[in-house]
Image (spheres, rainbow, N blue to C red):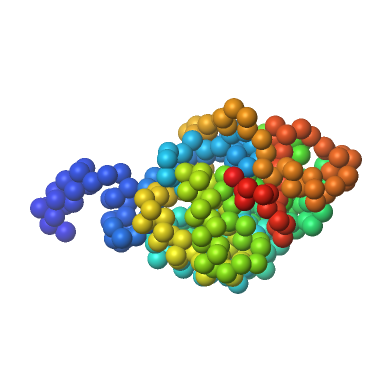
Amino acid sequence: MTRFSLALLFALATLMPAGSFALAREGCGPESLGVSRTITINRGKGSAVGLQSYPRTLDLQDHEVVLTFDDGPAPTTARVLDALAKECAKATFFVIGHSAEESPALVKRAAAEGHSIGHHSFSHPGKTLRLMTDAAAKADINKGIAAVEKAAGGKTAPFFRFPGFADTPELVADLNGRGYTVFGSDVWASDWKEMTPKAQLDLVLSRLEKAGKGIVLFHDSKATTAQMLPDFLRELKSRGYRLVHMVPGDGETPIVAAGAGWTSTTEPIIEKVLGTKAKSAPHAHDHDAEGGHTHGLDDTPDGGK
């Protein structure tokens, strides 16, 4: 490259907005969604974020979105990765340990393509970690972390999402004490329910328009999500949404407290599903740090906040 070309490139870099040069450098044109900015999640000081389960979330600007995917890897994960790559978009994958053992190449691919790899337990137990003993739950979590780290070649983030959002104060405190940030969500796609890709697209977009921003939850294990995702990413771009990517680091996690009157969206659902078992569980707890998941469940009447 000539000295003139280098000087021109430097001049362009100083004039372009922060996200634009990154897109150009990665070979992404202005028509691609790309990543608007990257935020650091402190890897030494854990927290619990996501307004559907916790009274705080990431401090995002209006029309900023964080994409997250649960329950992979699965046969559909490759299609999800293809859609993200086409738009130069980055996401966080909360990976199940036993699935990582079965499909390590997909975990390695996601990590190699710049996505953050988080954790989602080893077995994704049907009775939830909440209804297990502390020792059994911690063993499942740690086994999952080890399996995902092995599959990813050590390229994982200290991010954890509880299966079913069914946490306990003790387990959250244990993870936070080890530097793990526990993620709920701000907007979910309800992709555990049967619907067409168009119906799912319309639903998640309507929820995102209502929320204005947030951590969005999908499942890369769902064929409908894989089919719908290219249209969703294009819609984000056309509607003026900007993608934010989370990575572990040493800076402070940008967190904002929930507004007055906050209540958990997920907890009433998990209490309904678990019934009296939840109340008699060894780690029953109050709503300030609770969760509940909706895999295969009906949503709350307002469609998820």
